[in-house]
Amino acid sequence: AWQGQFSPAPDGLRSIQVEDRVYYVNLFKPGKLTEISNGMAGVYAYWWELLPPREAKDGSVCLTQSGSFVRPVGEVLESIKPSEDNKVSGVMLSFSGDCESDGGHRLRRADLFLRCDPEQHPLLLDVAFINRMRPSSSSSCEDIAVEWRTHAACPLCHAEDWQPIAEGSCDPTKGRQVTFMTSRGCVGGAPKPEDYWEPCPGVISMLAFISLAAIIGCVLCCLSCYVMLLRRRYSRYMVLGEGQPGNANGVAPENIEIGR
Image (cartoon, rainbow, N blue to C red):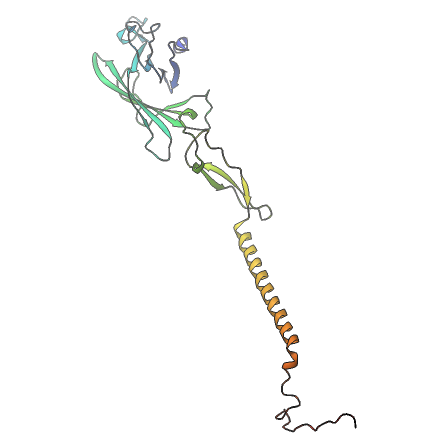
């Protein structure tokens, strides 16, 4: 119940819950929580942490250290860097701030990785601690790292980002559907190309074989027709010595006189 009474946060800060921890964050400008930060009226921070109230020895509930329900996590925005992993798009924001714990002070670092997720709804929060970067207790000053999945961290799509991907098995009658997906997450920019259908690989080989056989058949048919045309045109010159000396019987034919 004590967490819900401070939401929504003032001064442009947004309340987000990461597992069992509650933070107030504004990525664009530092803000202050004067309503719930007794003794910190002049403190501005990009990132605040909401602390649970602690119980006094007499059983009553009192404020946490420094007389406040909250404490700053990131007072200074150290850097903004794009993701160094080619397979993951996003932006890393690194913060730092003074942290008081057990009567001492140390510089606390906090990283917020805005991971590109084109399917993430803008009104839904998907925030989690990065592996091994979760504070062991709410009062510790350990460094923390949080991943926030959002479509706002995605770059614009370029034409070369869309790669053809064959979906499912191939239907011999319809072929195989090919759709386009981005090699890395992106939003807007170059539109997605339209899906199309391509013949199955086996069908392509069969069609190629049939086409080649048809071409060879046409060539042979043309050659046959050409040979028959030549034989018909030059048939008068292709008599194998009929009526001439040296015929097959070796006997010269008798002269035939016409008009007798």
